[in-house]
Length: 188
Ligand SMILES: [Zn+2]
Image (spheres, protein in one colour):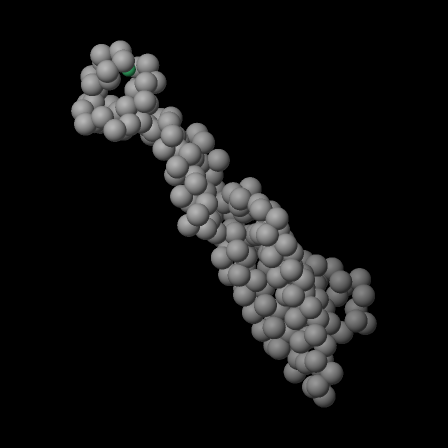
């Protein structure tokens, strides 16, 4: 559980981190190559923020995703579509506006919107399917009815007295044992 909380905290902290890194990058570029023009610097910094956040999000969450070939392909394909969409839309906006300052808000909207959309899409792609959930519960269930004392399988019995070793358990003790046994594997 704590690992999930840590990942959520990092996902939130990544927002200011990406923005600060974009601002610093923009300032550095602006100071070093002043003739580039403010619009280009802002657009570049915004793009950097979006890419940095998307990469950081993937780094944080890839450890909990059950990576199948299908998931890998879908993640890569949607990332490629996102990059293409950003390039095409940004170029279209840059070419269609007369004054440079007009396209900066559009760049922010396009790049930010595409990134947020990708984050939502991959979150759906990475989510556990009902079949995977059933398989996980079934594999956990195969050890959940074992006697806490001798590990005899108590599945199907109507009381909590083990016919193998004779030990009797309260339901609470039995549940505690199950939880203890399931916790390490369940929260990887
Ligand atoms: Zn037993």
